[in-house]
Amino acid sequence: MSSTTQSAPAGRTSGRPGLADEWRVVVRGLTKAYGDVTAANGVDLAVAAGSIHGLVGPNGAGKSTVLGSVLRLVASDAGTVEVHGRLAGFKDDPRFYPYLSGRLNLRILGVLDGIPRSDLPRRIDELLTRVGLAEAADRRVAGYSLGMRQRLGLAAALLRSPSVLVLDEPTNGLDPTGTAELWALLREIADSGGAVLLSSHDLAAIHEVCDAVTVMHGGRAVWSGTLAALQRNTPPPFLHAETSDDEAALAVTARIGVLAEPDEAGGIRIAGGPAELDAVTAALGRDGIGLRALVPGESPLRVLFDDLTTGGRPVSPGLAAEATPLPPPDPSPTVAEPASGALGDLAAVVRVEAVKLAHRWHVRLLALVCVVAPFVFAAGLKLSGSLPMDTLYGRWLLSSAPAFPLFALAVTGSWAFPALSSVVGGDILASEDKHGTWPLVLTRSRPAYALVVGKLVVAVCCAVLAVLLLALSATGAGLLLGAGNPLPGLSGQHLTDGHAYAVVLAAWAATVPGALAWVTIALALSAFTRSSLVGILAPALAGIVLQLTLLIDGPPAMRMFSPSAALDAWHALVEIPSSARPLVATMLVALVWAVLGAVALAAALKRRRSLAA
Image 1 (cartoon, helix red, strand yellow):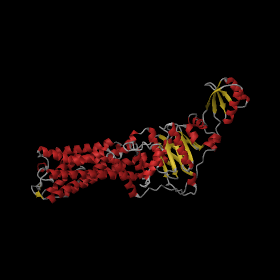
Image 2 (cartoon, helix red, strand yellow; image 1 turned 60 degrees about the vertical axis):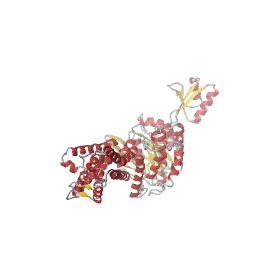
Image 3 (cartoon, helix red, strand yellow; image 1 turned 90 degrees about the horizontal axis):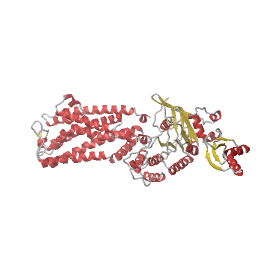
Image 4 (tube, one colour; image 1 turned 90 degrees about the vertical axis):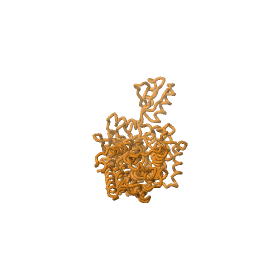
């Protein structure tokens, strides 16, 4: 049976009356293996509304796998996960976009959650103040400490107004004040009817803060129940006492009926709770025995943890009897609805990606190069007075304005267009891997397909925009550089201005399918390798190889069937007789490459566990 995670938006309940009011998270038989390693093996646990539930266990016990399954970041092999209410949280160290400020990170997450624009700034300000980041809100996250990122992660989770909050080691990097504030905030959420599921290695904090606990070992939940049940079935902890006369102190404890024994480390161990402690301290004082130190012993949770995870002891019958039973399955689960329809989801993702790209230096540089480079080259030609006579349309650059955009296309097309297309396409997916932000966006309200398709749309639009900017600037540079003479055709005829600019438009428009092909190839390469460097450089290098092949008159097949074949096929438009067939044929070849790239991209994304979940 495959794993399913059902989640309802805030304010909705499940099909079984009262079930969502009683239980917020129910995990049944959760199993997940990574190769030969079974990370979770039939895990059962239930998190009640109005409670804080701790997940404890040694490293490798399966805690992160369980939390990832609840957050829909891990696709389990078997079992089910029911989540009743609006879900939020983070797994491992929360990651954000380092080149954006804390405030802007929250703003784009609010867009992905469908929060109205009119409410979003106010909510962000409130949350930043609540988690203690108001003064650092407009600083780039790259300068945040681990503790500050933890605070921002909590703010990002609370932005969703969750009724179910899942946190993995939430106190990492927090100072004592921040830790105390976190526990108080989680208690406030639980007291308001929400539920918190968290993992931590701080057993003392778990014992103090949580209402229930699940102990995991070897991928199994060896015991799950309330801390009250644990207290009832665990002997009172020993207290370590150091006195001025340990022998006399043991005699006193024997006389008043309190169990005590010598401690191997020195001093004595006293069994009992507050009442026994009061009696011992009073009796020692009456007998004139000084009490130099009193250290609390191990908590019941520590005793149980050690017994089950290191001692290998089975759960006692009394404690096993008080384990929390799973509620009956919900026959009518509710599934989380997206914040809007498919077009709304795509529009939100496109908006978010546009904001992110506007803050990337390499994208700004790309736009600047596309606008400025043709004018710089034209100015150099004007000043030098020398022309590239051996290049197509090079000899007519100073005599005919339409010659320059065609010259630019012939000279730079084969190597420049793969590079222009891959600057965004090769980075837009891999940057999420680089910054570790896939969990950040996959736990919001927009579906995974919208995140991927939205990125694809933005990458394609950026490539087309780069082509458009380069075409317009090349045309403008030609108007400044060239005279008003007619453009000669390749068969010796002269083209009118209208005909010449129609050829320019058709030639540059024909590059769009090639740009689309290079975008999908860059996306596929970056998705397979999870490397922006490969996604950007590999298409650029391939374009340079194609350009060199053309210069040395390489194999005709490479010229005809490359993604950039349309960059040469427009020559038939300025010959006698003119023909659009070669141009159309090479555009179809480019579209085939685009389809192949899309198929490879889909195959790469299918391997992603988080996207598959």
